[in-house]
Amino acid sequence: LDRAVIDAARVAGELVVRATGAHDRVIAAERAAALARESASIASGSATEIAERAELGAARALDVELARSEARRLELDAARLATEARAARGALFESLALAGDPREVRVVGDLPRVDESVDAADEIVARAFERRLDLRALRANVAALAARIPLERRRALPEVDLALYVER
Image (tube, rainbow, N blue to C red; front, side, top):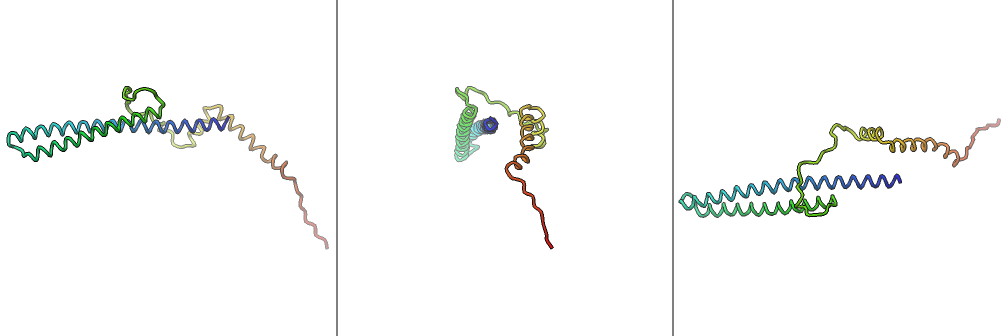
């Protein structure tokens, strides 16, 4: 039973790490996609302005094509990043074992982080022993077993007396 509890805790920890990483990747991918859409929009507006200036004779055709080319490149980047954001949402849904369409759920903000006031692993263990009765019982069981070790050694190993005898 103890082994099953430890295995379940390990699996739960791995799931939390995986889900947290997937959540962070979704947030980062969506932010990157939003920035790329904004950049593409600005570049498209700039290309339109340059085209209007070219009609008035204030810009060359080469400038117009360069601006349009940059706007198209940024639109492609925005589309690629949007695809990556959808893939990250799918990975998040998979790690959380959720059903449904990932596009229907809005992922917001950052996840709550571990209590930053905890400084060391020893403090975490001390808090756990302080608050959880099952861990206290486990500690008492380990102490009782440790106390039995010398008795079991004596049973397994017979006692041998050694003496030195010198004759003159």
